[in-house]
Image (cartoon, rainbow, N blue to C red):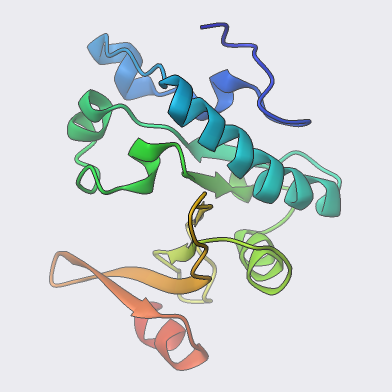
Length: 168
């Protein structure tokens, strides 16, 4: 599959399949045709409007994960939307021109999505990165915060109160 294949106006296939872990371990991280179609929809419905709004590059730190790659990175089970081509992790820190909080708030308030996660916020409530998914079936508009408590990942519904708890 051509890594320069355009999935949308702003995203090429290599941006959502590149993985240092896959490269090191020799893992094929090529999506199926079904996953490719879902990635195109995700990029068109979520990433491109976000990129257009901020009018600057936005980094994709993780996208599609094959089963082998998901196992290697100890990702969530195969129910992970990354394995279905329905999720990306975005990170403003890659280009350092906007904040992850700005990305998170814009998606939450303006775009259709299935799940939006403020991942591991710092003491100021700034997400370390933002997970967003888009489903071809039903978009729940579920907004969560992920943080670690006693070494385990905990997900809370997004609220100012829960953001304070997760940011400690």
